[in-house]
Image 1 (cartoon, rainbow, N blue to C red):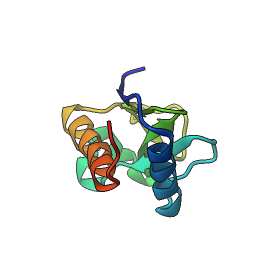
Image 2 (tube, rainbow, N blue to C red):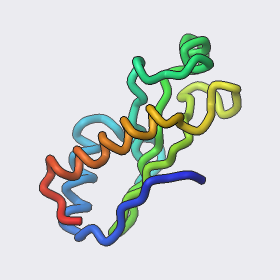
Image 3 (cartoon, one colour):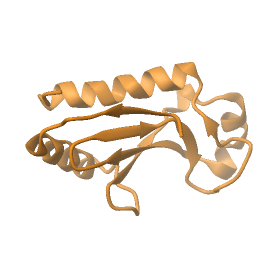
Image 4 (tube, helix red, strand yellow):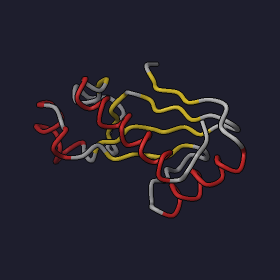
Length: 111
C-alpha cells in the first residue's frame, strides 16, 4: 500500500488529533480509521464519470498509538471494486498530504 506516515507522535497529541477528527465528522465504521473526503475539484476523469454511482470518494487515515498513516488509495463509499477506485494522482496526493500536515500544524502537534 502506498502511504504517507508520521511517527513518534506523543500520546496527548494523538488524543488531540483523534478528538478533532471525531468532532469534525471524519469517522468511519472502523475504529482508528477516518475517512478524509477527496474534494470534488480533485477528482480524476474516471471518478468524475462515476461520481453519481460510486462517490463520494475518500482517502483513509489510520491512527495508531503514536503514528498516523494516510493511504493513497482513493476509495469509493459505495463500491469496493470499480475502475474509479485507484491510487491518488500527484495532485490528489499533494493536496491530501497538505491537509494532514495542516491538521497537525493547527493542533500544535509536536513531530
